[in-house]
Image (cartoon, rainbow, N blue to C red; front, side):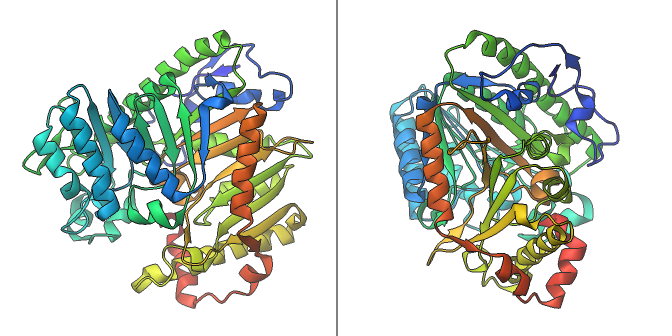
Length: 489
């Protein structure tokens, strides 16, 4: 059965428990993967599929290579640059990146640049993402567009009283999509100094026009219901949108935004269903996954949960997250409905970006340790701890932000599937933020070996963590915060 990804019928209650699967329409299909991947055929019913050759994909391992890549691609782009991120930093590396775009726009009148950032994070402080990019708007207003997504949850007295940083807890634009002509770079990294130097993340570069076209359309669709920054620095609505996210009825904004995204995904699903049947030469298949919980769109989380629950005996998952706060649904599925061995890599407190922060934020590393401890204890009680192992990443003067997973089918020495993108698999990722990642399924041996090298490079800096997380002290106030506010971080 082919299940239509997104229905344009919108749940009027928009409750967070509503899943995208509830809205699917069934269609018959005989599509299957080649021999060896039959157990993953269900993916073709859950997402648009972009068949490619594995040699079109590059795995980037280091932050400085990520930076060099976006600089090079920005300088050489001829037609389009599309950047979707949480924010852009204001340091010298970021300024060099902006200057590269400026130089390209100056010499190429055909180049269009679209940038999508989060409003609350992107306007924090006097020097911020918006002020960094404002000169490009003023000089290239016909070729450069900056949109800033403002969550519809932040409104009324909360918007008036919630200070910067705290207002970001309610929901963010968190997708990390960097597109240059027909090159698509999917990552969890933001456009700021740490992510260019000593903050470990993951990055995958895919050369494919159809995939680039899709992501341009997706970002453009989110831009429609985001705020448009003008030459005078003020924000206005886009020309084909009429609802401010923080005024009027929240339902009107959310309902229409969800409808537009769902219609786009439905359209792409049908197009790529036909494309799959015509690409018999492919050895790798790309499935774009999105999650927009505050808009009532749950797609990535459904696919991720089904990956766990449909795993076969003898298989292996390696799961990475910078912030260990897996949803209860994920943890219950791994514990009770998963047949695979599981290896979880997370940040050691010393590699957590919040370590040493002032105020309540300084307790966040301990909070993640506490959540991991409770999961480990639950596995022990369920007699499943033999199947799930914990590791903590630590590297001197580095922080850790890499997330995703790698799935090995039985008797495979290399990954057959990987998830990579912005999701941390946590409460925020599922229910509060706008997220995007790709599911890559491959039979290409070269790509599989490069994915394995990526895994090895991350895990070699991980140490066994069960004893550490079981004995690590957690302040009582952190325990109370986790109990009350776990779905905010």
